[in-house]
Amino acid sequence: MRFTAKFVAALLPLAFAMTTGTAQARDWNTIKAAGTVIAVTEGSFFPFNYFEGSKLTGFEVEVAEAVVKKLGLNIEWRVVPFDAQVASIRQDRFDFAIASHGYTEERAKSVDFTNPHYCTGGQIAAPKDGALTMAALNGRTVGAQLATSYYESAKKIPGLKELKTYKADPEVFSALKAKKIDAWISDKWLIKATLDKNPDAGIVAGEQVFVERVSAIMRKNNKELMEQFNRGLAEVVKDGTYASLSQKYFKTDVSCR
Picture 1 (cartoon, rainbow, N blue to C red):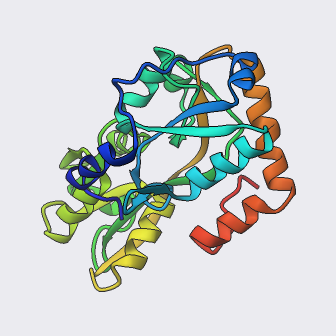
Picture 2 (cartoon, rainbow, N blue to C red; picture 1 turned 90 degrees about the vertical axis):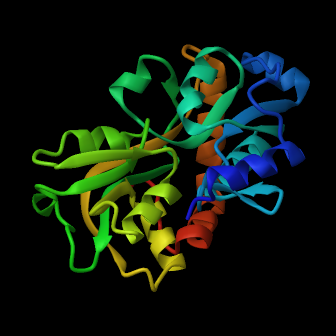
């Protein structure tokens, strides 16, 4: 499950600069000369990017670190709330963000997407005798994290009684357990990890709502950096590092096959 916003906020000052930093997005030659790339993530999206104590880790964190290593660079992390990341990239505050950004046409107006580093989809989670299909959501109350593709997808489901929004997925999961909502829509891998950690919650995974390709994002038209990132990602896939990380975090292949 994702850590609460309060818990993450308490950890951030230990090791990471926040949005008040002065980092600037740079072209490839500038980054290469500096020897360090500045990347942003959320830090509260288990198992993709999260904290173990004061250490930032997760599938996306390790993939990005492996990619950057292939490029012969070091990586310097920043932590920014998910709903502020697209704006931060547009403002040239960081070189790239990797925090489970699913491709949408709307986002693509503001930022460029690298090649995808995993494929997923929106999925329903509900009590085992509850609303586990799209049809069963008719007349029900659904919860989703604000400013995500899961929220946008949930808005399109016909017949909902109400769509409640939350700042983070742990809050949605807590609301579902407390029966304040009938179902939760989020990333299928996050739901799997959450339910694996909470086997006695009485919640199960239901129907998949849509398929999503997930990529890192960077400022528009930063062409050479995009090419270098995609090259590094391809090398991480080719040498088996990606498969190893996929098995470590999910025990399955999460690539876009």
